[in-house]
Length: 381
Image (cartoon, rainbow, N blue to C red; front, side, top):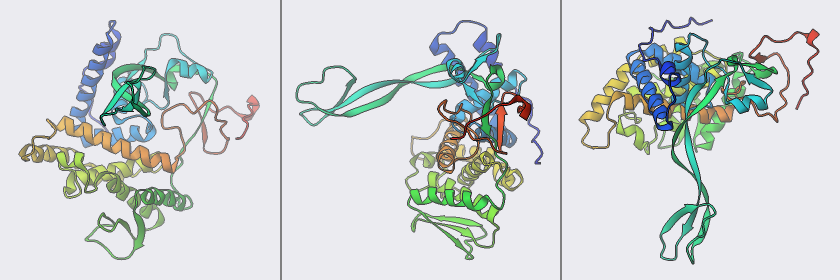
C-alpha cells in the first residue's frame, strides 16, 4: 500500500465556524465559500502534497466539481473527521432510507441558480431569450428551451458518516490488475476515438517519452515496450492532452498551459491520469511524483509568463491559475470517468431506482458490511 503523504497543517480560517455562527444571507454564504476556496488554493500552490491529496479526493468525489471537492475536504478536515466519501442533501438521504443524525452541521457547497428560458428568433434576425411561459413577440420563431445559470448559492449537504438508516451498497475499486487493464484500455481508447483520435501502440519513440499526442495527425501513440498496466496509465495521461491541450485551447493559452508550454501542460495531463486511475483503484503516486511535484513551480512560472504576455486577457494571480487548472483537470477527469464507469458512485448517492448487484467488490457505506446472519437479500438488476 502506498504511503499516505504527510501534508502540512492547514492555516486556513475556520470555514465551519464562519458558516455556523450566525444566520447568513445567501450572498454572504457564497462569499464565505469563495473566500474558503481561495484560501485552499493558496495553500495548494505552496505544497505539491496538497495538490496530490486534492486529486485523491477528486478521484473519490469525481461527480463533484473540483472547487466543491476542495470545500468539502476543508470543512471535514477542520472538524477533525474523515474525508467525505458519499454526499447528498437532507431530502436525498431521506429518499434512500437514511436520516441525518441529530446535531450534525451541514457541509456547504456552491451550486448554480438556474432559470429556464425560451430562445426566440425575431423577424429582424436577432435572437432574444424570454422566461418560459411568457408570451413571445409577434412573428418570433421558437428555437427551443435552454437552462441558464443566473447566479450562485450555497447548498447544504451531509456526508454518509453524518447519517443513519438503511445500508447503501457501493461498489469499491480494487485496482487495475493485468486482467482488468485491457478492459480499461479499451474504454480509454474509446474516449480518444470519440474525440477523433486513433490510438497506436508502437515501438517508435518520440524523444524520451512513453507516449505522444499528435494533434496534426489526430493520433495518440503509446510505447509498445510497456506492460498492460503501464500502457493504460500512459494512455490516460495522453487523454489529458487530448481533452485539454489542442491548438484551440484558448483558456490554457491565457496562462501558458497549451501543449507548447510543457510544464503546466504535463502537470495537467498527469493530474488527469492520476485522478482517473485512482478512481479505478490504482494509486500512481510514485510514478506521478515527478510530474506532480512540479505543480507549484509550474503554476508560479505560468503566472510569470501570463504577466509578461502582451495580451491583457490573462489570469490575475496564481490562485486564479490554480482554480482554472483544478476546474480543467476535474472536468476532463469526469468526462473520462463517465465513459470508463469505475466502481463507486463518484461521491453522489446512487439512483434510488438502481438495484445494485452484490459481489466481492461491493461495500456498505456508512456501516460495517452485514454478515450472512442478517438475512439481507439484494435483488439483482
